[in-house]
Amino acid sequence: MVLARGGLVDLLVREATPIGKPDSLAQIREAGGQIHTSTEIATAAFQEDEIELSLTSGERLNCSLAIVQIGFLSAKETFERLALVLNDDGSIAVDPYFETSRQGIFAVGDVHGDIKLIAVAWAEGIQAAIHAFKEITSPYWLNEKRLKDHKIALIGEKIARAASKARHP
Image (tube, rainbow, N blue to C red):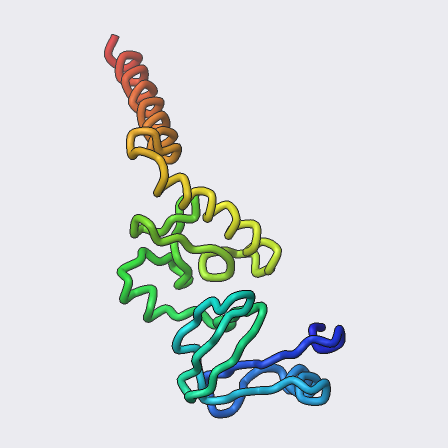
């Protein structure tokens, strides 16, 4: 889409042979896009109005926008190495705030959810960013998540006490 609107595209691929959809790769090549293989971004820095990328291949690229797609397959080994609690299907277990079992690590999109749609991942990402921001900017005792969880715990305790009284009048 960028190429069709007169923009330039440089596609960076870790593998020696791109594993993307062949017709998409052909469209990129035919429209004048560059496909760089066996390379990754080593560093990225702002240079005035552009982003300067240093690649592991030694090349340097300047761009006004970078879109990162890590891939379609989740890295279960990475999740395990980070000691994240996983669901039975290998996806990451998250709480209602998209936080994983490790405080400060959030997961959105395909790595935790049943709905594999980019629109869902975007929406979850926004919500997770809001919760992460609140987590790092609020005093721990005012943190919305802790307050809500504490209220739920208090309600649970009240219900348990009431049930106990009902059984043992």
